[in-house]
Length: 632
Image 1 (tube, rainbow, N blue to C red):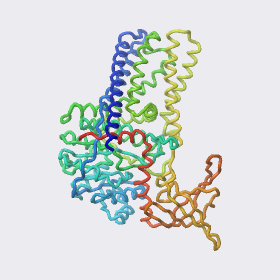
Image 2 (cartoon, helix red, strand yellow; image 1 turned 180 degrees about the vertical axis):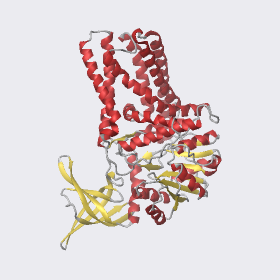
Image 3 (tube, rainbow, N blue to C red; image 1 turned 90 degrees about the vertical axis):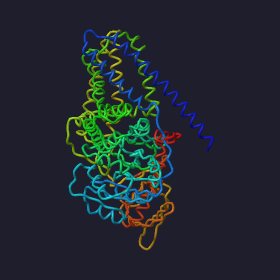
Image 4 (cartoon, helix red, strand yellow; image 1 turned 30 degrees about the horizontal axis):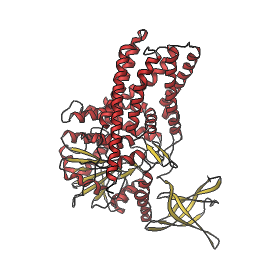
């Protein structure tokens, strides 16, 4: 082990050195490019277009500078020794999430090792949730006046509890057994108000994931924020409190009057208020709980709209750029986060510009093709390389741009939060949901149609154009439109194909869980041996050469590590599976009779053993979390 640290440290030093050199080169090439653009490329026939597009390019460069500043050096932390004998309350806030999903979170929450008390905060005031709390021997807190949405729910719980520290969990965020042990030691520093941990997810087949099981590679759309940007913000005490999973000091909340309730992003708002009081919000980059990412586009869109709308509300209410209480580094980091939403207008303009050029033949700049290549290509390639290095590779950069395009119209609409004081809090759909319909992605389809029209018009203009400036200008704009189409089309197809029909998620991989299936025909017993897959609390599937008839009643024995369970079930579906040109049949079995404690054992096994194992293929997350820790 001792030899691994210098090697790890050396690799990180070399990686950071290369990245810094590429970033500095990107900035130099950018300054060189913009000086040339401003002094030598004026289009006298369309000065308005020249200045407008130059301003858009400069705004894009500002976004890059903010990204480089935030992620120049990233903080990584080790877990201190746990503080002994402290009182900890675990808050699980819920409104209308399925009870099956909520139970999985509660089961694992009450089973965490450090002594604590778990509370279900039920803003839906549901009898079945009350019964769940009673069955799990945890606290149940509800209210009749549901003001201030989730913040009001949390603040109401503060009145009925007294733990020195509070773990905040969403209804779908299932904690690991050592969550409290890993983070409570940070609070030895009395200035620490919050420790935020990584938001990781167990459904690697969600809308926002790209997973290649055969290549053992996975990527998800929030990975950049939690693996790169949050560790960068942590250097400036500008970590964003994201609600779940995190631990909060109660006395710090008392200083600011509890969780901020004026906006629909109470988590980020609360963290910012604490930082303005000079308190610390740390980021501990480890996956200590895993949630359920939106399975469909509509859930993804709802989530991003709420985040953007709430961020704009926080910007209006707290004025972090010019208000009191923040350092310059904190102001820049928060400006970068808010600017990310405003820049959506610039990105939309970027897409519309080549369409306009190809339809009208009017261009924002005039330049000799060789001169353009001399200045633009180094500027473009160095910035591409810098972004790719920071994001974990060119593929990660490409996927990020895909998702940035599909959520572009969502981000544009979310800016309304800067002007509207009141907005309804909406819970992201976590269970059954249909794929996106035409109307759900109308703005994205309209933009794709405009791109295709631009390509058609541009192709026609190129066909009839003479060699020279106009030909090359048309070709450059046409190439950009093709790139935008290649980025947009696959993600729209994904939006219209991703749906979720199960009440709770099933882990798709083979799980090394031996299954014994017993069927009776007359007085004879037919026994089938195999392995369970697609397992959850409601059932599983088995694969054999021949189908089990739908409707067949079966007796079930599953050997989960350290636990053997028995149940009865019914075969409810079957489908063919081809493996190396051999036809097999997958039979889905639903549990009919199973003890709830047996179901709980399934949940603990899946979330504490299988989810971390499967999550290890998240390359950027894995690599960032394995970095050698730095001193706090």
